[in-house]
Image (cartoon, rainbow, N blue to C red):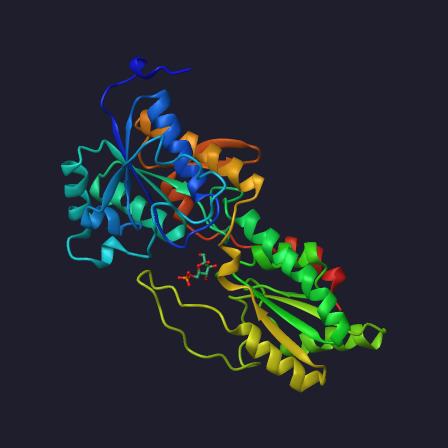
Amino acid sequence: MRHPTRYRAGVRVGVLTGGGDCPGLNAAIRAIVRKGIDHYGHAIVGFRDGWRGPLENLHEELTIESTRGILPRGGTILGTSRTNPFKRENGPERIRETMETLHLDGLIAIGGEDTLGVAARLYEGHGLSVLGVPKTIDNDLAATDVTFGFDTALHLATEAIDRLHTTAESHHRVMVVEVMGRHAGWIALHSGLAGGADVILIPERPFEIDDVCGLIRRRHSRGRVFSIVVVAEGAVPEEGTMAMTDREEDEFGHVRLGGIGQRLEREIEQRTGFETRAVVLGHTQRGGTPTAFDRVLATRLGVAAIDAAHDERWGTMPALRGTRITLVPLSEAVEQLRTVPPEDYVVASPFFG
Ligand code: F6P
């Protein structure tokens, strides 16, 4: 049922997706457009490529027609980038100008830690009407229990581990599976648990390579002929126990991770004598169609975001708390990373070695 005339006329809301893409972004965009236009009678303007869109006024009007059929599609129809407006000359002022030129009442930024960090600064430091929607496969945002994208990445990683079991067993090999997650071990821990990994290494708990090899040796001494090691890309050895290389940084000062799988492959093979192969799942974890869970979560957050925009609740973010969606201050979401608590890791350790 349509009720557009019941509401404030002529409200215009911008929307952008920033940072790494993830499955569920299109479901969130669709929800914002559908409820925004059909229910409230608002106009929705989509910005291209994250914060680059409002910086350079790259936009398109989003309609029910143009967002039809996107619910099951991975990626983002708006495009994305890791552009940081605070690293560009007059960035916040240029965003304000674009919003004024397009007569926007506010802007919804769908993103992770970096994109939402910019949104919080634009709201608090520059008085811009911005609100956020949490997404990331890393699942590392505070203030929400789960981010959409995580469940799809987790399924992909679990399926990969299942597949690697059979080839590892046939060849009597150790398989090292490197998964994403930046400085949080959610994907590694959960896919490792779901896939029955023999060792799981996460950034929250620096590892000793001797311990890793000890677990593999123990397992093999008990008659098993293969092992699966799941390692988060951000996992680090205890200081001085294994050499690591320097990394380049992006506009938000994040180092580009990846490569720990290959390092472990060499170390494990040399130290144990067991033939070892590394598999880097990489961006396959971000691609493809979202799971039903991610579609539903993204849809609920999208609806809550356009409701919040309608109510002019700028500076907030809808979050999943337990089973309910609730509005929280944006600042809360970016205060700190939500990493794996030690008690969660303890659950996995009886299955090691
Ligand atoms: O934040 C999502 C994420 O996929 C991380 O897990 C990973 O470290 C990073 O993005 C990779 O970024 P890029 O796509 O820029 O290589």
